[in-house]
Image (cartoon, rainbow, N blue to C red; front, side, top):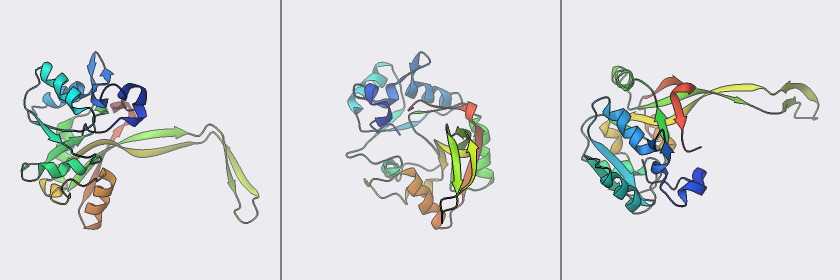
Length: 210
């Protein structure tokens, strides 16, 4: 998914599309493609919108083959471009945001997804958050302090922007309509579909968008 404007990286993305952010002597999108190629994956679909001609020219100049571009006429969000794959996918599909670098065993992820017969499997990292202040718990009726915790820590499993989806999921995405992945996940779950979570450590994930 490489069509977004990269608003979190505005100083950079004013001039370049987010997938071309430098990362480890290359670019983010080249790093992602390379990691999937290491597992024998040869066919790549890339959704494009913002500064798409610059991105396509860069990849073509660097002789990337087997890239199929999904051209968004309007911004389709983090899942809307899946509608452009309708009728083209017969096997389970990896979907990844173009600012997500993951260092995990993709075969284990695939086995987990298939074994449990999930409609969608999302990868989530265990991440700690620390509040930099004293957090107050109060009585809501009279405002009296119950306790104060100095710089408390919280741990959450956060979605990192890598998914495995069954081909049938694509048919639930309306063509050329904006759709974010969290909405798609809720839709599938509300219809009784099974959604899996593949946990990883925070050290196995780099969010280049931040």
